[in-house]
Length: 200
Image 1: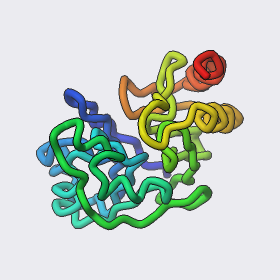
Image 2 (image 1 turned 90 degrees about the horizontal axis):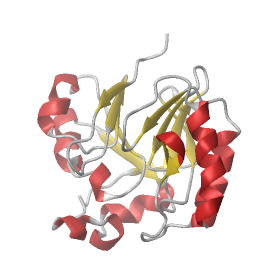
Image 3 (image 1 turned 180 degrees about the vertical axis):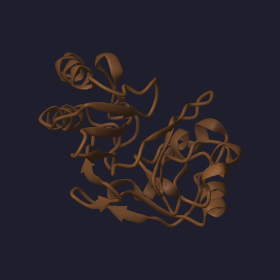
Image 4 (image 1 turned 60 degrees about the vertical axis):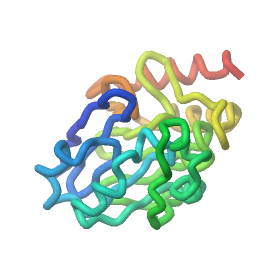
């Protein structure tokens, strides 16, 4: 039986987070929002290393006694204030160790898909059984997608990543910002695929 995906919606500049079974995806939420689920969470997966997705990583990893995973290309973001954009918020990168995730790895019910473009190590989590995609900032609803003008971003890589995702069967889109699309999300993916070349 598939685990439901629970949405913890963005607060201010902090990104959306999601809980699915024992996994917390992105660590932006206050401790009070995650505390009710602390007994079930043992793994925190970061979709990429920008500070708005890991602002409370240290506190949440401690609360849940959870291991931390991130795409292997973004490991350096955890200790670099400039790469992570933490300095833009007057903060510091969390400085935690993490396990690297590579394309094709399995985590819980999901397969890791390396989707560089927004950052070099951005990842999505895909559940083939029901077409659920946790997309981070790779793509958003309504034909939108992540920006590529930040450190390690690449428009060419993002275009290739979205083309790759568009070849999958995606029914639900769980994005890093904006509201999730719980069904019929293939339309949004195809809109992003059509729009992204216009901005290269």
